[in-house]
Length: 363
Length: 232
Image (cartoon, rainbow over all chains, first blue to last red; front, side, top):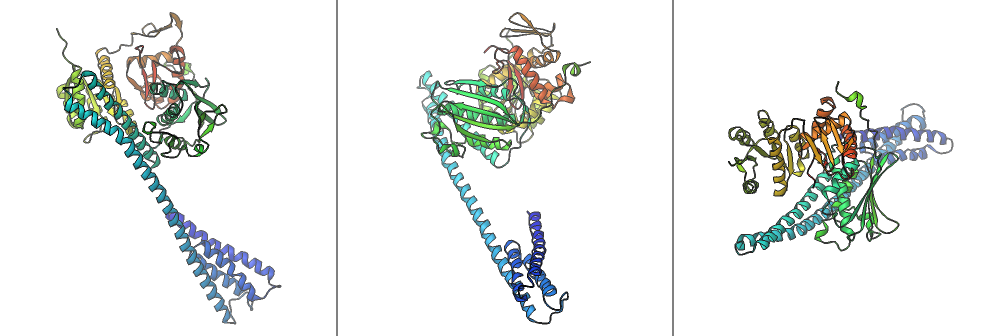
């Protein structure tokens, strides 16, 4: 920051020299056509420009340079500092005053601009924070109520309940705690992604392996859908954080399963596209509202008619954050037959191939 | 003559988590020794000589990885680590330091007991590298270096044999990328994960019914691989 300010200041002084020189060239070209008084007016221009853009030091330097150049080149005796007429001192003072006033105004305008931007950022942070709070309190309250009710019933009536009832209560506690863990996990992950607490652990990874592992992990949640895997045999390796990419892929698949009717197809595809890997999760559900294509990745956005069971609207924002961290891009698009494709890209690098087996063997 | 009940050392600072571990493990017939901290746990491992240890990675007094190192300095008892989701790195570190498997919090008892059973079974029958591995219609005879599928001989390259043998030695347990690479390719190749990706793909094509959705040569994303022989 300090270095940045220093270079901004230096630039101001450089501009003082450049602008004065440019004005002098223009003045010399015009000297036969206009009076020295009007040339003095010409010299106000660099002072104003530098004062607007840079600090008062640069503005004062410009004023000084301009008066010197004007005095040496346009006031007789030429090419000397001798000032016959005290009026040119007045010129200098006025230029200096103009420079200082304008640079002061510009500085306060700049400060106000920064303050406005900071205020806008604060408002956005505040909006996200309150959305987070209302979302969390809603999505945690329900499972918490179930858990506290079911467990207190076990504690107080345990003896009088039948085995099947006890089991049902215990099962609902287990299930709801899973839902809570997921909400917490998502909130925590989003926070870590946003605050830069995550450093990518990049390693050579096969997208096919990630797909196999995520389909295994989500088998129960995808059980109501037909899942099709469409990966070419020669898919190149990618150097990514496998854990994060698995999470992104998992979120997209869960999202597809959540928003499409049971029995429909969910297709996971990947293909090489120039220097990128293009990964798609396609569903054949009702499709998105046109306005949703832009906002579906926003935090706490929920699709129409979503309830607590539909998650807290962080899944896709987490996907976006993960893909962006990998210098990829992510978007949603309408499929020709209805349904939605969520696609993301990952940059490809040349994977070194393992040494041929003959040389890699033990002696 | 009844077998003595296996003893399990639980190193965990949260009393509530110790409580549920104690009751679940005791219900399965295990004896439980509890340690509320890492220093205590490392000492108890020596004095109680349990059959295995369950070590939480987020201990306040001593890093769980350090507890594992201290136990590994003198014992090969199975160690299963409990890790939170945010401890991805230390999980791999713990496994590389000698832990045999991990389980991520929050977890269900079923998952934990399955890990404990595999770890104890592994300790009871250490592999000598001469066994026969069988799953689905696949049979691999490591002693004779023969592999067959559906009674048809299949060709595994020497490295593929070494890779599957390394996984089979830790049957049911996770093996990290680093461990596989240094045991199959040598310690200088411990970082060359792309070798593994290429060779695992080849192995799955030869051994799995559906190589895209493996049921036996499982990927543990970000950690390593696990060979599971049961047909589930």
